[in-house]
Length: 350
Image (tube, helix red, strand yellow):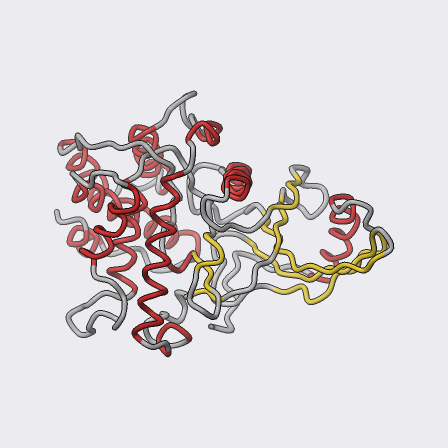
């Protein structure tokens, strides 16, 4: 894993530990004499949210206890997306953990008052495992690159199975996602996911038009899909947002910061496009041996979900539109060079 901290901001961690101790003690039944150690930032992941890892020890019921935890802090600047869904991601994780649909970290508590650490935050249990990081690319170095083809096959299959299993989420349990902040009340389905990115185009660059994004938006509207299966949207649905154990089994599905009720095919399309970038065959690199092909991924996902993939090409193109919006947004936030208009036009097939 990369030793680079990519968090949007860093802070005085000993000071934060002192701030968090009484709060966490209040969340653990009977806890006294709580201590925090090993507070640090993860490496190679966690760019959009400030994420901090730590270990805690305390006494309760005449016994000593210890546990690893993760703090996730609401961004107070450098917002990548137009809508604030910080509390919603916490609530989605609670539902998924309670329903045992896919493995997610157990949440401990949510603090909406910014006074404690400067912004709202939530805490969840820390899970043990490995993440296929983006920086440096996992296909080139690290535990995935060093694995056997059989191990990578297990890695890929477990990832796709858990991607598919998110569609087993009872939608009545996540109706708080209907009409998200910034949207009209009750908005769901494709209209909800479309609304998010329709507004994104205006939000990312109000002072400058991006004609290529406007053209892509109109082209997608002209091809509006008939197939709109309902379902939960994870958002950043990729294998790099899963944690795996030493047996290459999934132990956590992570980063629910853009969840919605937008429909089942968005995550499949996002997964396929991210996989194409991360490990599929390119002009100069073969498919990472052991990883499933695009066709195998679609077949396994459909076998598990039973959902039609008609009009998937539209959702794939919508994903490219989404990632193009994000390219503009992140370039502004991180001070990177703006995306090249010609390159965006080529990406979007215009």
